[in-house]
Image (cartoon, rainbow over all chains, first blue to last red):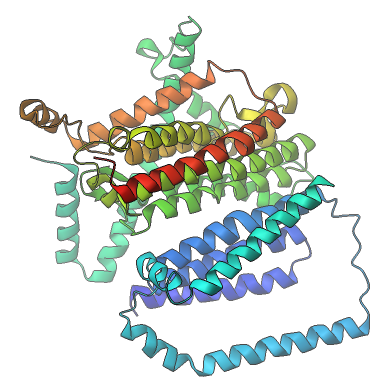
Amino acid sequence: MGVTAILFWILSSLALLSAIMIVVSKNPVHSVLWLILVFFAISGHYLLLNAQFLAIVNIIVYAGAIMVLFLYVLMLIDLKKIVDPQRSLWIKLVGVATGCCLLLVLIAALSKADQTTALTQTIGGNIGLVENLGKILFSEYLVPFEISSILFLSAMVGAVVIGKK
Amino acid sequence: MPSLENIANFIHNWLYTTFNATVALLLEFTIVAILVIGLFSVLGLVLIFMERKVSAYMQVRLGPNRVGPKGIFQTVADTLKLMVKEGMTPNNADKFLFNLAPFIVMTAAMLILAPLAFAKNFQIWDINIGVLFVTAISSVSVIGILMAGWASNNKYSLLGAMRSGAQIVSYELSAGLSIITIVVLSESLKISTIIESQANGWWIFKGHIPAIIAFVIFIIAVTAETNRAPFDLAEAESELTAGFHTEYSGMKFALFFLAEYVNIFIVCVIGATLFLGGWMPLHFGTNTTFNEMMDYIPSSLWLFGKTFFLIFVIMWFRWTFPRLRIDQLLNLEWKYLLPISMINLLLATAMAILGWHF
């Protein structure tokens, strides 16, 4: 087994273990910290796939920004006072249904995994480097990119409006 | 001539001819880890002594002067004291997170060292997005601080951690934008390419006014990011006892203290790399005699000279300006520094496209 294989197995088991711990742990702060560990493990996987830009952006956006805000809010709440609200049967059923839908999507994606690997290799495995990613993002996917940035802008405007109230 | 580059290459070749690839790689990891830990401990000793001497000079005192000649062993004695002290854990604290937090802060600081070039062709990992790597990892250290503040189960610690979190998250923006100014000018995210682009002049000279504005904003933002005075609200001792590390003692406190100084060193290395040419010697136009004389000084000395100059500037701030209030701190970032750095980035982009820099 080479270094890459060893790293792959370590990262995969780490990601799975921490993903399970997110759901299992009683304390929400611990859950968030486990989630941060999952993001790091996934970034490690991106690095193994030679997608360094994706790996770093994953850390900046998720571990560095969103999770810090999560932690921020959770730490200010008095966690002992909050009792888990009783959910109705319907909500539980909807939860199960959405989980199954996600599973279906994942299976559909994984069944084509061989094809995708071949596609990635034809570009030389460099698709994740910032240069190639930028070129594709600003030529082929320009319209979705701009639309998603407008979405972010509207979210920002919304936050300012709510903050002004 | 023995340079750091030659020594590193020699060790690399010897390891790969003696052992097989996997073992050699693991051995290299070990060597790098030992070197990084060694650098950290030396830096801790040097920087804390430097801080005390600089503050003494600013306040017309002598500073530490009893242990060893001119007091140079004072920090060694302090470290020994901290090592033999008992590391207490409060009763109602979240014990695991409480003990983990100092190590997270320390590990984040260690990771940032990876893409930094300490001398010509002497760096741990020349990743092609080195600058982004640095900003990503520096945003992680705030998790360690929040963890420490929350796990201590203490109001002062929590308030300190919250202030620190708000401060780091907001000042990261203008630090990032001023870093991107240089990325735009040098057209690369790779640290070694950024340094190469400064062979005919450092960016602070070549980049005209946008580079100078970016440099000033960068220095202000990193002072805030490292929780240094005048932005040391996170541990404002007159209001919060000691901020997020109120409950820490012994070696765990020492790790936070060390991480603070190592972070100052790291941001100063980044500043020196981006704006002051990294290990590039000072060159003036085509004045060959002067340029050759400058080339004789080893590249590592150039980098450390620039870095320690910036560290001195940051220490100078601490003993010159009074501490800001929290609203003043956030106003400064969101109402002044952020708009200025955004317009500055546009200016720099226009300059890079039109080719106005040298």
